[in-house]
Image 1 (cartoon, rainbow, N blue to C red):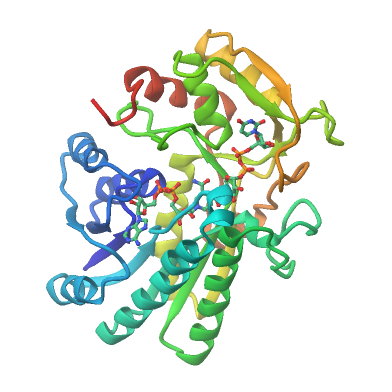
Image 2 (image 1 turned 45 degrees about the vertical axis):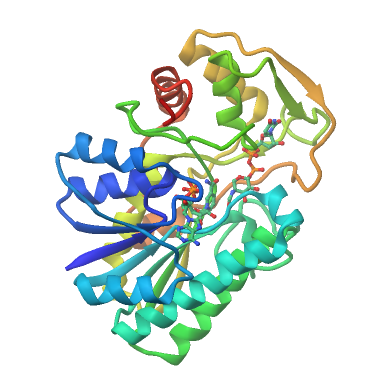
Length: 338
Ligand code: NAD
Ligand code: WQD
């Protein structure tokens, strides 16, 4: 039996495909390469000595999905494919709802037609909205999202809840990621954002490698330890391993369940910057800028449910996140582009 990994050529997808292949799972990847390079999976194959079947195609394309389910013995789907830039989603809401919500609906319909009933979804801490108490815990009602991106994740979670309630054979796990960072420790695969990075760690790494002049820190007057924003950063390989644990749990799940995947502790922007400088030996110049619209002061996960029910917790700390980010960036200053 095989796992279908949508978006498997992307950042989190490629690390998860690597983990799946390493343990011997059969993997089929469907990715339209809108935000990824074919090179990521070539490197995964070099690292593992194993091959994932790659299909270049779109989750909105029913014919492609029908062919995938007809030609491969798919038992479960890990669904990473989607658009993920919060700022862009406010400018292109229809594209975000089309890819993230309609795309998931088409995928679920074609799964149903093919009799595939096990589903893992890439959700996000953003579904807790702006007013949830910190640390975020799964018993808090989701909602109050502040961007089309966040609302698209919320909508898919509600769709999964309702579908699972209607079909006793369908089971779904929504994994609510906190802030994924880092890279595989080989430095061969990692995060390769298009254009100027939106997220903190890729930005810091590109300053360190000389692609950008200085980090702008978005606000130093938040009610946090040093005034800068606090987040729960999670190493991408810990996150990848969380998907394997969730996959193993799916047959025992009745209906729909959501789990936070985070470290359970928060670090400030300045703490991240200092940790990166320590790991890389590179000074990272910065300047304080105004707050970024829509940013929250501080949030992190209560990660105890995943520990209790999935037998999963993070095993990599800040120094590994930084060392692995730096190794990837140094080896690949232009990302996957040669
Ligand atoms: P990514 O952009 O690297 O990966 C997404 C992949 O999906 C890309 O390879 C892209 O080419 C593909 N894709 C996009 N639309 C598609 C479509 N319509 N059909 C087929 N393929 C399509 O992003 P990532 O960081 O690896 O994120 C993976 C998932 O996790 C996304 O759903 C994202 O919203 C979610 N997530 C990411 C973060 C984060 O900070 N990186 C946090 C929480 C949740
Ligand atoms: C982290 C901290 C910034 C860049 C986003 C999405 C979220 C999830 C992960 C998908 C904040 C500060 C950042 C910079 C800075 N994605 N910062 N200068 O905003 O927590 O989360 O990505 O689901 O939904 O919203 O992550 O890495 O952008 O920011 O000072 O150049 O770093 O203000 O405090 P964020 P981030």
